[in-house]
Image (tube, rainbow, N blue to C red):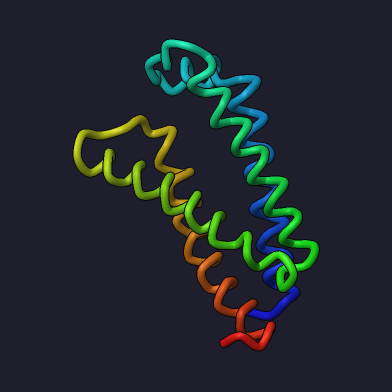
Length: 129
């Protein structure tokens, strides 16, 4: 990947996570009702991860500003995407999950793959590979 495509990747990832975070923070009850997802029991169980998504979105936008300088943050994004997509697919294949989670798991798996490629490319660009 070249630097321009890496910057675009992280802008898209940042906006995606910011939007998802705000939607889950402000509209999780409507989403859960629409997709027939059982309540989490207390809003904090959804709102806290939503805030974390917003923070990751901000981090991705910061990475996009200078991927070489901010390359140490890239593994955290890889971890986020691996954690969510891994859990979503694990539960889908073992006990099943709501259809709401699968499109996001697929998108995060694509981001995970792109983030690994970007991380390797940034190391090469920085002269570390």
